Amino acid sequence: MTLLASFHYSVADAQQASRRVHKAISEPGVIVSLPLMPGQRELSSAASALLLTREEGADTLWLDPQIDSAALRSTLHFCTGMPLVSACNASLALSHARANPDPATLMARQAAAGHNRTLIIELPGLNGGLTLRLSGDGLRETRAVAPQLPPAVLAYLREHPHPGRQRSDLIFTCGETLMALPHTVRVAVC
Image (cartoon, rainbow, N blue to C red; front, side):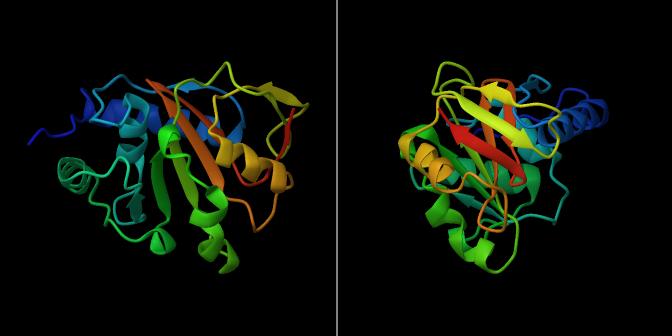
C-alpha cells in the first residue's frame, strides 16, 4: 500500500495551504497554488493538500466510484481521519471530470435539509473551457473564468445560476492549483 504523503513542513505548509484555500473561497474564480506534495492515483496535489487542511472530525467524505479504490480509501482515512460515507450523508464529495458528476444529484438531499455541501472535482485544466461570468459575494466586479468542466456541471450551473440553498460549494482542482465557486456566487455560463 502506498500512503499519501503529508506536507514537507507540516505546520507551515498546512497553514499556508489553509490560507490559500480560504483565499480561493473568499475570492471566487481566483486560482491559487497549494504547497506541492505528491498526489495519490486520481488525486492531484491540490486535492491532497485541500483534504489535509480540513479540520479533523468536522467532515465526512464520499468518493466517486470511478476514483474509489481500497488504497485511496485507506490513505484518506489514515491521513485525514475523515469517515467515508454515502453521497447523501457526506459533507464533502470527491469526483473527477471523467465521471461527469452531477452536482444536482449529489447535493440534492443535503441542500434540501439546509446543509451546505462541497463538491471537489478534479479537472483536466482550470483554463481553456467555456467562459463563466461570476458576480456576487466576494467580487467587486464581474470575473470571467474558464475551467474545463464536464457537461453535467455546466448543466447544473445553467440551471442554478443564482446563489441560494439549492447551490453547493464547488471546488475545482488541477495539478497543484485550485479554484472555488462558493454557493453565494452567481454564475452565467457563456
